[in-house]
Image 1: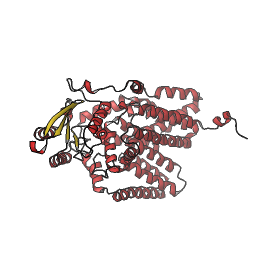
Image 2 (image 1 turned 60 degrees about the vertical axis):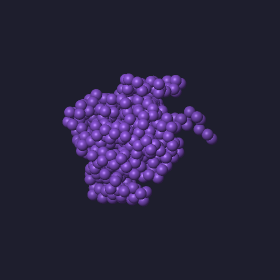
Image 3 (image 1 turned 30 degrees about the vertical axis):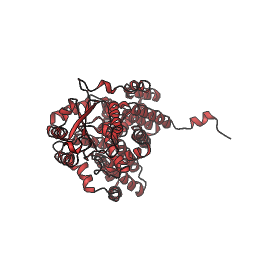
Image 4 (image 1 turned 135 degrees about the vertical axis):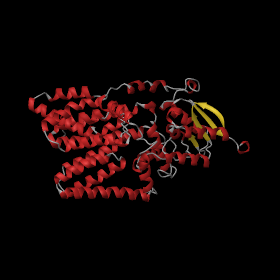
Length: 492
């Protein structure tokens, strides 16, 4: 005899209803931002992934960024299945992030029951959507790293046998290969193992080492040089011109904006309450402290870095609120209502962008190429890339000066240099000089907006200008880029 429909719905755990709502919110925010186009970073990863899967150019031979090859697989598959698109990495990222939300529920449920699990899901599922955590970018490396770390904590918390601990080490290795900041969470995992006993440390470390070398060997079989992985993901990311090259004043301002001028302050009272309740430094506080130290050591202070803190903060918040509910017999429904009101993201941009579904682009070509020269947004960069694709041959090399990864990705043309989106370390500059002098691309695009001069060093700009003057003729202006085409050989 079939169960009545009402009984069937009542048998579904409440956490799945929350997950459905949170997945919907993630997709709503992720898909209705950035002019329905790849962001600058996503365009870089798509370009590298496409060159790998479509053109057979493995990472670092077909374009460089400070990410591991493991991450480029997602964008390579995206291009292989759907061509140049922005939605697949974000949909996949939202679903993957939701796996992390579910396992955070399982951790909280293990620690303090299902209501604590629902609180953790609410805290974490809403906070990852915040503007202060760049919730629209679910396709970034943090999504995958943090999800694997959450599952690793769950496995170690429920470690009934050596297999679970070993597998937790493997997942931690995968997290580390997605993003090096996972190292700081792994420190907390190792502390948890130490408290469980020497055998736990051995099993976890064995899994970590095995997973790390298995991924390295898979990369070698794919034709990727481990020395290049080390250089481009670690060695070339420190020092002058690198992404971490910032002075103390810049770091101080960014630290203040990140930790005191964002939604993260909503968690501070809950962390203080947890310290008062527990009166000891447990594994959750070690996790939170390790993540905080990691953010400050790396020192980029990007909003998306805040996601490193959110799982531990969500669990701490859930346990603190659960303690209050149980001690003072507060209405759980009222508490959940307050949390969803206070922690919900401010959804402004997605609603504004809904209009584009009916009115089309915000920026059109006729609004450019006259003063004031403004940088094209994601939508205009996509249009420019598509224009380049339509006016060049598939085999033509195209170089976009400055930070032009979106144009490069949508043009579906290969850059003459592996540094297709300007990188300004000494090694990068030398490579760009060599590549551009060795092979003159058929087309060069030079920005007219002042930000190009503001953020790109003089020597790189002078190189592009000298090549344009000697070997190219001005063909067109599109979206505040001067488009130069290579002169016929007899005119050089």
